[in-house]
Length: 333
Ligand code: BDR
Ligand code: CA
Image (cartoon, rainbow, N blue to C red; front, side):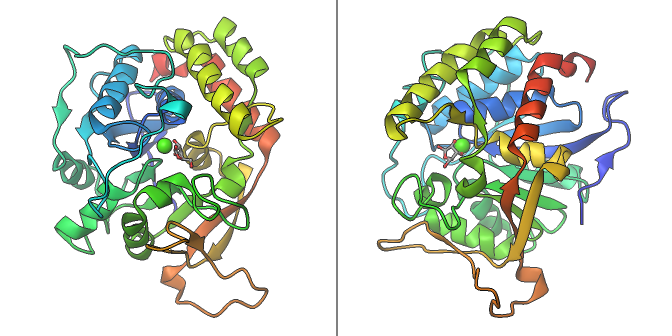
């Protein structure tokens, strides 16, 4: 079932209602900007938790971006400070910067932005009953907590889940086996993959290919008519440098977290394989995403199948990315 598009979100654009869970983070920040700019996405809240950076910083970064975009009306919700295991968190300043936005330091406080508590999530879910897509591009702690706190039916009215996480038939990026969002709270990832329905998954095997180059960002830094323009080059350059160190010879940086959002509004770009996804919780393969890719997989009940992103039309990804940042459609939203 595809999430219903809103008839008339704010007078003009037809748009999908999206509640975003993120840990900005540079690619998360691109995802937030993309969601704000895409006229077919109506961002109804951002849950900001620990992950690439501390929870408090992650909240500030989301607040900064909605303020820059002139969308202080979008609720910012403070998420989790750490994983369900209670283990200490490892942050990634070498990839995302000490404050999560590369060299950019957002202000410490925001006059017109209210930061909400966790229970605001339930309020939003009820408000948009039957017409809300959840996109998760951070650790899965907050989403797993919904099931823990409110029961297995807590999110039954969500039309679809779009999740960046896992890695199929390719190496991980945190360990040889595991991708960062699944690894950092493998218990939560296991819970979400077991209990959420209508899941579309965007793993490293496609997001690693969603590469934006410095040349493209140069074009945006000169021509984007949006209020985000000054941020694009410094944040991207920082992130790209880290990728150059980790992946010698790479020509650009993968903007993982934009992928699930683009998949909502541009479904023709992606191809999926329906399989049941499981997540290793502990041990050497902690955070590993598992699916049965044998030509004749063991049969699984239909309702347990997830749609695993396996192919992406990268030139179309780039085209849409550039178009959204060059149009600045948010002014019309
Ligand atoms: C994922 O991990 C995070 O560091 C990125 O923001 C992305 O969500 C990629 O593995
Ligand atoms: Ca992220």
